[in-house]
Length: 95
Image (cartoon, rainbow, N blue to C red; front, side, top):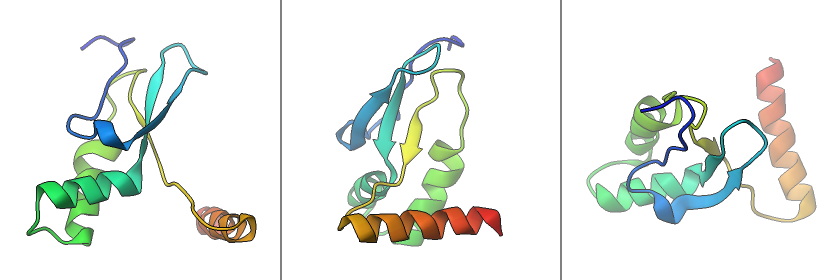
């Protein structure tokens, strides 16, 4: 691995939603909830909570250099629903 390579999360190409080109190294952007669904399809005996725990520990919080992927929660719904969801997440970080 090199510090300035762009990295992918193996087995989750269908969960790619974009690329972040703002830094020194392009970073692949993934939909976290799509990754959970993909993991569940690959591991049918696993629960949602187990899938999230696995991904948190082994994928989402792993740092492999400047090209470490971004993992985002996507938001569906009306503009008001999206804003309310984002406000709830932001409030959790302020507590």
